[in-house]
Every structure is written in structure tokens, then in C-alpha cells.
Image (cartoon, rainbow, N blue to C red; front, top):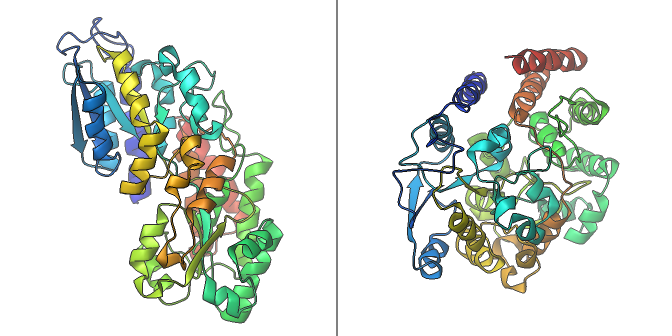
Length: 429
């Protein structure tokens, strides 16, 4: 029910923005003017731990002629709703110049007129410092506009209990395991060994297996013209693979990632592997503190993926978009991203930062392994895939049907067809 409510709230917000987007009196969004704002004052919206406050303090030193004000807002859905409401409003006197955006940045691409085109402010040169896949998430389908610059990334890796994998004869090192799970078939064989010899698992649900596999593709649910392509073979292949995992008994249950049940499964040695993002390190460390030193990280099964990461955008209502753009670029310089990683574990997106020895360190929880090497390589090798503004509609329909397959025994082919019908209905709203 929460998913359904969230879906209709998102659709409502999109319609509100669309309805208001073409209205205004010359001082509204998209005009580049804001009579009530001082040109030497630059305001930023962000959420707690979304940006490194020590770096934000450096902005004041780097731009002494600017009154820089960073406003910390509640995170999650509240933040996104507030931003959506702001963009729908014709009143921009109190609007910020800069806004932090999460992985949902693609949902705002149809409203690019609300944002400054950062290609006009040195963006074409600046984005060369970042992996193409990351940058593309904030570029309109026609390739003409860049609405935000990269902040952090969330490359994936395979977290696993080294002691269990050794005891079962699967792998003795992360390198050996990376090789064994470098193909889908190889990964399935490892899952079989875990189940048959150890009565344990590395997949918590078929929904999570589906989502993590999607994050490794070079195309998803929509093409660059926002045509739905989620009914094509590349999605059906992923669907069939995760259905097969469940049929073989290789999925623990219907357990949501990072839930209390998920934490308990890790502590009870039911879940001894996890294909997840770098930010999950802290979650696993908190959930299974007593297993410190027993974990390692290999590369993700069959391909590198990404699950998260933020962007920094300049609103078109800013009276000084040029300085705002320079501040956005300064915050996300390689040097400042390195500092943010050390202070807040915000994994860098700048290639120079990913290649820097300054982010390397041994981690006691992971048996002294420098897991940064794993995630840095992953971040540089994620495949670029266009995310349409209605991405969540398609993903929700598919994962809801997969849940019915798992919990209600629904026929997988019927579930596939029903997901496509639901998507068709939702896209027509």
C-alpha cells in the first residue's frame, strides 16, 4: 500500500509541476530573474550528511565576496516534496540558488527549464572529470542540457563472509571469488554451493535480485526519447533469471534490504553474501558488529553496478547562476570529494579522486582489506544507461508483481503481463 500511495503522490507532483511550468509573469522560474534576491547572496538546500559541512565552510573562503548560506532540510521524501513544490510555485523570492538532488534526478529532466543549463557555465569541460555513466543521469535525452553536476556515487560490490566461503570451499580471497562470480552461471553455482553445503544464502529476495541486476545494464525501461522499452528482451531476461533463482530455492525469502529482518538474517548467518552499494558498509557493520574481521568485499557478480549517488543543481531562478555554478563545481572538485569521503564516507565521483591513494585505507571490519579499491574500480566501470523520468513507475510495477510471485505463488508469466498492463495504465495518467 505504501508503494501505491508513493506512486500516486509522485505522479501528482509531476502533474503539478507540468501545470505550473509554463505560467509566470517574467519573474518566475525559467526567467533567470528574481527581484527579491540579492545578487551577492547564494543559498543552498541540502540534507543532513548529503554534503560535507567542512567543504561548505571552504566555500566561504573560496568566494569571499559572496554571502553563502547552506540550509539543511529534512531528508528523504520530505526533501523531494519540498523541492517539487518549489518548482511548481511562481514565487521565487525565497528560492535557493543551489539544490542537492538524489539519484531521482532523472525524474526532473522533463522540467529542465526550472534549472540552469550547466553546459552554459563550463559544464562541458567540467564533466570530463567524471565517469560518463554518472554524468549522463543529469543530461536531457536530446543531450542539450545538463541540469546538475555529480556529487557522490554508490558503486556496488559483493559483501561476503570470508570464513563461510572458505569453509565451503568456494573462495579463499576476494580475487578468487571475483573470478568465480564474473558470469551469471558462475554466480548461480556459488549460490548453489551456499545452499547445498551451508544452508545459507546471498540473495534475500527476488525483488532485490531484479533491482540489482537492472543496475548493471546498458539500457533500462526507457530510451532517450522516453519511449517505454521495458517490455523488451533485456528486461525479460533479467526477470526470467531471478524467477529461476527462486525456483531453484536460492533466495532466502521476501526480505527487504536493510530491514530489521535483513539485519537479523545477517546476524543469524542465514545471509552471508550481499550484492550491494558502498554505503551498505556502515549498515552491515552496525547490524553485525560481532562478526568484525570476518567480512570481505569482491567485485559485484557478473558486472559492476551503481545504486545511489547525488547531484548538485542550479535553479534557473538564481540571480547569479554563474557564481552558483562555480560553487557547485568547487564543492565537487576532486580535492573536496576526497575530503568528503574521509569525513562522511561520500564515495567520490571525480575520476581523479577515485584514482587517488588518499582514499585508500585498511578496514578492520573487513579483515584489513582496502575495500576502496574494489569500489573505485567499480565506479569507473559502471555501464551508462538512460533513466527516464518515469523510471519509478516501471520499477514499482515489476517489483510488486515479483513480490506476488514469491508470496502468493502467482504464475511468473501472468505476473509479467500484469506488470506491463499496470505500467501502460500508469504511463497514460
